[in-house]
Structures are given as structure tokens and as C-alpha cells.
Picture 1 (cartoon, rainbow, N blue to C red):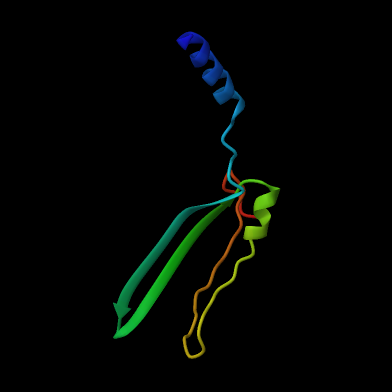
Picture 2: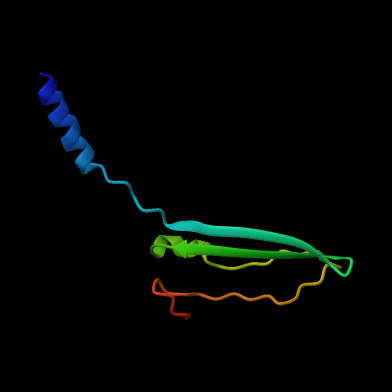
Length: 85
């Protein structure tokens, strides 16, 4: 009886696969420093889109307030093998 239940559980677990997420945050780094009396905030995000359903997460937006200057803003899209698109 126990063997039958064990075999049934093993067969059910093999049918259930973990679905790969549509999109994943691989890295989110924030560096804060003070240079010449001014605060400098530097952020780096690495987002991986795994399939077509994850494409709704790929628009990039940068939020800021009036009076706060932005400089050195960069964004790029890479393939899995690191080729920049």
C-alpha cells in the first residue's frame, strides 16, 4: 500500500513542472556616495525577459522629481549570449 502511494505521488510530481517566470529581476544595485558636498545616487538593474509574456515588463522608465538633475543615463538590451541589440 505504501509503495502504491509513493509511486502515485512520484508520477503526479513528474507531471507537475515548475513554470519558468515570464520576467525576473536578476540584479538591483544602489550605490550612494557624496562627492564635493553633493549626494550621488547610482542604480543598476538587470532584468531578464524569459518569454513573450514577459515583454510587457520591458518598457524602461526613469522616475525623477523637478529640480533633481539626471545625468549619464544609459540603457541597453542584450541577448542571452551578451550581444547588445
